[in-house]
Image (tube, rainbow over all chains, first blue to last red; front, side, top):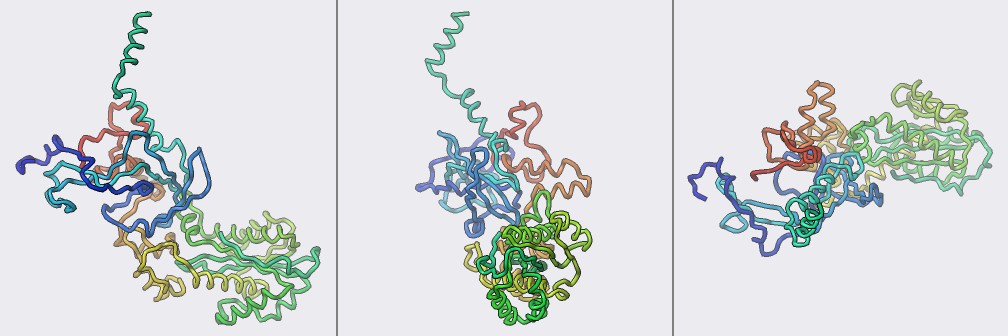
Length: 167
Length: 303
C-alpha cells in the first residue's frame, strides 16, 4: 500500500491470507471466551494458570467444564465450529516473517493466519452454559447464511420453476 | 469440599448415649489457604474427662503441642471428630458470585453442615457449643431452628470457655496447618514458591510472598482468596479485569444505569475493536431482530 494513503482509507483495500504459514498452529481446545474484559492484548502463560476441569455434569446437552479466573468460578463448554467453518487467528502481514509490524500498522491492511481452531470454549460467570447463551444463538446465523448465500443448484431451480408452473 | 473424619468403627459408647459437641474454625482471617471447620464430640458422661485433657484455645498452644493433642484425641475411643475443609477457590468464588455469599454465611453453613454430618452418623447430640460468628443470638436462633431439640450454646471465646470447643479448635487448627503446609499448587508456572508464611495479611512473610507471586493477568495462584480486600492493593498495577457482576454493584450504588452494563454485553462478539467507544451496543440501528438479539454485527474494518 502507498505510504501516502490516509489511515481512514486503509480499510478500503486489504487482503486476508489464510494459508501463509508453513505449519499452522492448531489451537483447538485452547481458544477461550471469558465472561469479562481483560484489558490486555499480548502473550501470557495461559496453560500454567488457567486450569480447566471437566465436571462430568451435562446441562442442555452440553458438557460442562469448570475453571477459576481471578477468584471467580466460571463454567463453560467447548462449542465445535460447524462443518465447513474454520477459526483463524489473524495478524498483520509483514514482509519479514515472524516480525510484527509496529508503529506503522495503520498503513497495512494485509492479514495472514497464524493459527487455526475448530472449537471455542466459552465461559459464563456462575451460570451453567446453555443453548440460550448469546454465543450459542450466534451459531444460528450459519443456517441463515447458507440459505442466503449457498450457490443455487439446478435441482433448486427446477423445484422453483415447478412451483411456478403449478400456480 | 474435603472432609476427613473419625472412623465411626472406633466409637466405644453405646449408640443411645447423649453426646455433646464443640465446633470451632481455623483460618478465617488469612488471605490464603483453606478455612477449616472442625468439631469434636463425646458422650455427656465423658465431659469431665475431656476437661482434664489440657485442651486449650488452640491459638495459645505451640504447634508441637497441638499436633500431639490431635494425635492423642484421634486415638481416644470416647472422642469423635470431623472437619470441613473449605478450599480457598470456593471461598473466593462464593464471595465473588453475582449474588455474593459472605464469609459469615459460609461459616454458618459449614458449622451446620458438621452438625448434620454427625447426626447422620447416628450420634445423638443433645448440646452443641460454638464460638459466635456475627450476632450471637441471631446465630443461635438460626442453628436452633435448623436443629430443634438440640441445646445450642453460642458464645464469644467459646474456645477458651468450653473444653469441648477447645478440642474442636485443635482439630481445626491442626488440619488447616497441615493443609497449608502440604498445599499442592494447581498452577504449573515454575517460579511460584511455597514460602507463604502464616497467611495473615499482616505477616511480612505472607506480604512478601503475595508481592513475589502475583501475576499481571491471573492475579495470584488459586491458593489465594481473591475476595480479600488486601488482594486488590497488590493487583493495582496488574491488568484490569472487568466483570458484569462488579458493574451491577457499581450501578446500584452510583445509579449509573445501563451504560456500564452495555459495555460487557459487547465483549463476546465485537470485543476490543471499539476502544474508546465501548458504550455503544453492538446491535446497530435498523438491523433486524434476529441479529439484534444475537448481538451480531457487521464488521467493516479490522483494526
